[in-house]
Length: 283
Image (cartoon, rainbow, N blue to C red):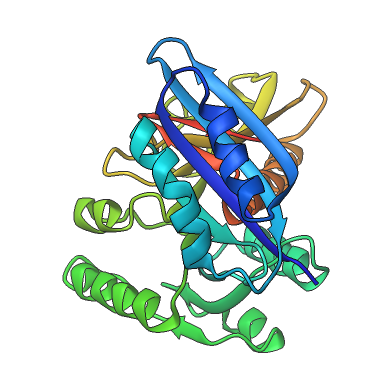
């Protein structure tokens, strides 16, 4: 049985990056299973993702040591992920549970390789779902006076469980700037793609009244700029005048659940590299 790793890197583009990195992996017996690269011409930055297998007797430190000359020569930012490890995630939800249910289903059937170590909600509604799936549930109501204390509890939970990411599965609370900064790149959110046109309650009903022809959803990393973090995944679907407002809502629920699950999968498989306010997503 081989050990499986994913190497992601970025640096300023120069000749021989690919040759140097792949030769370093070959020298320690690494066998490349998947490789993708991208050159951002506007910033002259080079991005690469390599999935490779190697004899388990080769420790991770030896892999890092083999890549060190390349990292130093090209001033690379390098990340190594062990695909054999099942990453831990925390899911946060409010009253709408469609995204939560879809994530849990995809974990259960093995499409999402993750261990959901906690479900956190500002409402009690999701407690039944957590119990049915044997997942610890934390009901933490949020008020203006308790918000920062609740976020401190979330920080402690992430540290205690070793969660790699926090997934906001229609969690209808805005995270503070401090928490968004502290967990940057580790919190994924989903929202309908009507923003900023239809803010507030019942956005799909608002869209129906305005005769919208396309509805969709966007999954993104959370930043202090509300709903403006680096985009990971999006999807749209055409709708018509013949559909009711409830049809809009149902279509939106389906899109939100799919888009969020795909974004989480991409993150867990180390397919995303941040590129300023954008992302490079390797399929």
